[in-house]
Image (cartoon, rainbow, N blue to C red; front, side, top):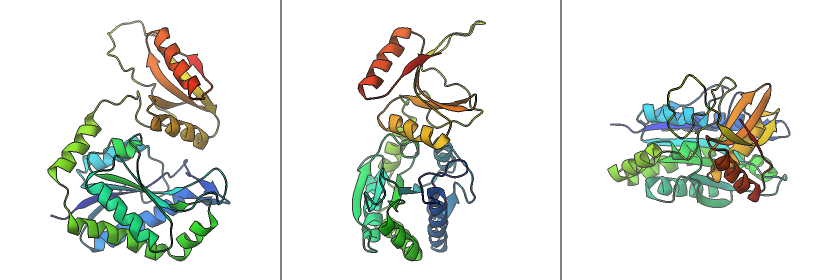
Length: 294
């Protein structure tokens, strides 16, 4: 049977990803994802795209799509960004942890891209990322150079076909060398099924409900009050997303609430005010400005 690989173009729709001098990450991600997907399809791989047009999907929706398809691999395409233009350069690939076939595939991808002129920044474990944590198969997230680095953009533009070929060949080469073992799949499924510390696994859309509290609720005609710690209030979705992802990467039970024309980044949902206060103190120690809300 052929392998099934979910190809994910990061960001999209209302979420442009990184932006630099009019260049939007979501566009670069989509063009490269489709190019790699087409090359894999020609070699007999069954390819499923999370998107082929400019639409927004939450990270949780992408992971769910891959799980429902019972895919063998999940590969997400992104581009990196730094605080200052031309501050950093290079490619890196992110995985849930540094083990198994996903590690091998990530190293092969980075090595292939470095041969085209990119600096190899290595393979890094990022267990807080939803698309790596909640997928039930080996998953990778490729950061194909820095969007706000002129050298990386020149390579990206002049060698896009070669980049797509290098990634596809690295994936196919890994599949020739190894197969997804039952141990790989069981490990991924176990982690995906593990209860998350977060009250929400993803960024929510504007009509999303409030988060489900971590404890079981007792049926009651009177709605309970839950205390949440707010760390940010934004008009621009991208800014809220940035804070949200930072919090999730640090293991905080963070979520996004769209309300009254603003995007609110909040943490936790507690029945006891004292628990919210403890969380607030922890967040403040990590440098966040906070307030407790209900």
